[in-house]
Length: 159
Image (cartoon, rainbow, N blue to C red):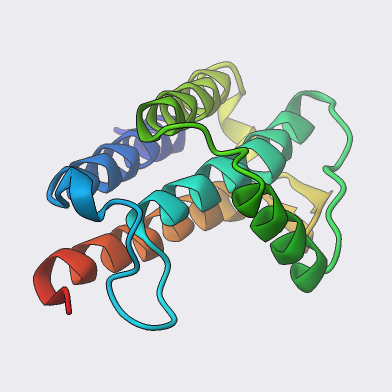
């Protein structure tokens, strides 16, 4: 029997690997170019994922080992702060963002391995309201898949 811990660890690993694989399909010359009007460049998508993992993904899982609920503003406030950080050049180069994304995701995967199996259904107050650990990790997984899809669309339909 495969336990939820192993399943979620695999999903977080695979979704990270798939996102990074998709970014490798994009030429270096296009990493910082918007593929279409009103779409983020691939580098901006990676910056967004790193911000999410740092601000919400990892801190939300840490709640199940006793950390406080992460503090988040409204979606609009958080988006404005993130955009300002991007515009101010806080992203670093692409390789640095990849390394940070990997490190944050690896911390999450390792942390999940320390939690008892019953933690998955335990509900805590999260930034999204009362949620189980399974919901919180599924949100991180979904978020990564959403942006992997965007990168793949950029690769397939670049205009």
